[in-house]
Every structure is written in C-alpha cells, then in structure tokens.
Image (cartoon, rainbow, N blue to C red; front, side):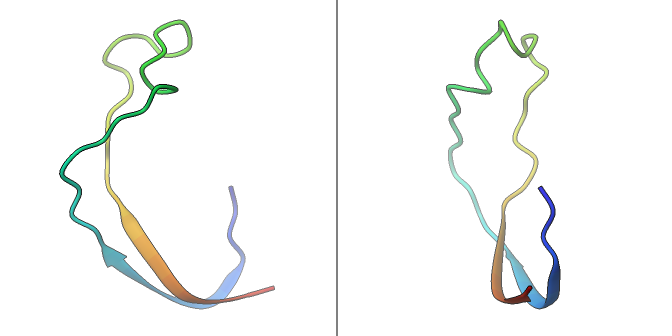
Length: 48
C-alpha cells in the first residue's frame, strides 16, 4: 500500500486485544511468524 499524502497527523493507539483469522492461517504463515507490531491513527490527511 502506498499513501501519497501532503500533510497528515498520526497518533498511537493503545490496543488490548488483536485477532486475525488470516494471520492465524498456518498454511500461509508458519506458526509464530505473524505478530502484532503497532497501531496508528492517521487523520487530517491531505491527499491527491
């Protein structure tokens, strides 16, 4: 994904629980290879 933005603001989000049926599919991702990294809230995005 690419976001072509001119000006934007970002804030960190606090996450208490994460689930993903796609990320849990061991036929696609080996066990332990998918993990939650961070969550960001982008706002006031001026874009093309």
